[in-house]
Length: 190
Picture (cartoon, rainbow, N blue to C red):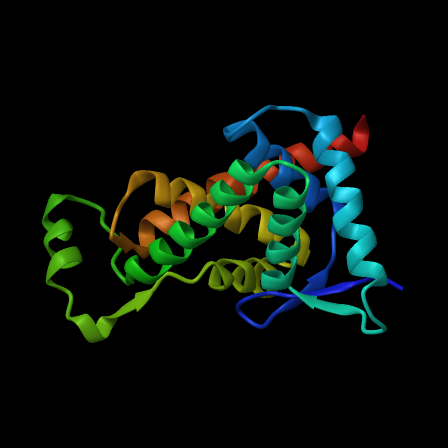
C-alpha cells in the first residue's frame, strides 16, 4: 500500500522515497560530506520506519522531517540534523514574511504600485497556489506542479524580496514550467 503524505497546507500526495534521498543528500552536502550512498542508506531507514511504524498509511510532512532529523542525530550526523532544522524554520519564516501583491510591473511607473498597495490587498506567500494553478488551469500532474512551484519558491527566496508582484511569479512559473516539461520530454525519449 502506497504511503500518503499530508502536507503542511493540508494537501495529500504520495510518499516518494527519492525526496527523502534528496533531502538527506542536500543536508549532508552542506555539513559533513556529499555521499549519495550514505544518503540512500539513511533514506532506507526512514522509509522502512514509516511503512512499519503503525497500521495507518498516512504521515504528515512534519513527522517525516522529525524522523529524518532523528535518524541523522542517531547515526552521528548531528550537524546535518541541526542544519535541516534551521533550514526548515528559516523557510517557514520566509513564507510568513513574504507578501504577494496583485501587481504586474510593466514599466517604472508601475513599480510605485508595488509598495503603495494597501495591506489588505496583499497576501502571504503560498506555494500551493502555484500548484493549484498548474493543475487546474494547465492540466499538469500534481507531482510536476509541485516541482515547478518548489523551483519558483527557491528562486524568489534567493532574491530576498519581501513584497513580490504577481507578474514576477507568473514569469518565473512560465519559465520553469517550460524547463521542467522539456526535461520530462527528454527523459521520455531517452
